Length: 255
Ligand code: G3H
Image (cartoon, rainbow, N blue to C red):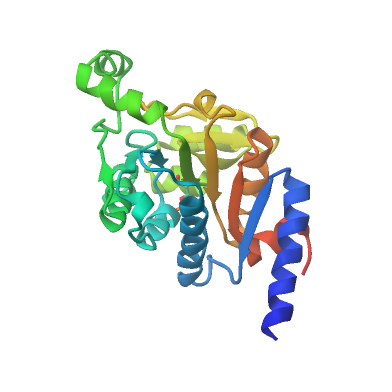
C-alpha cells in the first residue's frame, strides 16, 4: 500500500544519507532510465527544496543536462521567486541547446517569473581566447554574479556517456577509459575515488568555488548512474541529493 511504499522510500533515504555522507537525501519512486516522468518527479522534489530555502534577491546557478531540463519544467512562480536571479553555473560544454545551462536557467526564470542572465561562451575555446574573454568587462560582471550564487543545482552523469553525448574526441574518450573515469558533473570528470581527473575548459563556477557557503543540490537518478553518484559524493558531499529508487537500491545493494 501507499504507506508502506512511503516508509520504504524513507528507509532508502536514511540509509543513503549515511552511506554517502549527504545530510539530506530525497528518493522518488521509479527508475529514470526507464520512465521519463521520474525525472520530473525528482524535479518536483527539487523545486520544493529550492523554494523552502530561497530568499528574495538570491542568485541560483544551474547546470545543464536532461535532468536539469526536467527540473526547470517543474518550476512555478511564488512570492519569494520573483526577485531571484537564475544564472548558468558554467559556460558551454558541447550540449544541444535544450540541455545547455543557459537555456535551462532562462527556463527556470521564465517559469518562476524571475530574472536571468546569460553567459555567452563558445564551447571550444583556445587558451588565448579564454584568457582574453574572461577579461571582458561584461563577462566579468556576469562571472561575479555567478560566483555570488547562494545555491547551485546540478546533475551528475556517467563519464563515458557524457563524453560521447558532447562529441568528445576519440583520444579524450580513451583517456577517460585509461584513467577509469566514472562520473561527470559541471564539466569535470571523476574517478571512482571521487578525484577530478579532467576539467573541461570553460568559465563560470570552478570546483573550488563550491566551498562551504554554497548550498548545493544534486539531482541524478537511474540505475545506470549509481556508480557516478557514489564517486561524485566522495569529492564533495552535496547538501541535498535528489535521486530515484532504482539508483538508491543499486547504491545500497538492496534488490
Ligand atoms: O551535466 C550533465 C549531467 O552530468 C548529466 O546529464 O541529466 O542528461 O543525465 P543528464
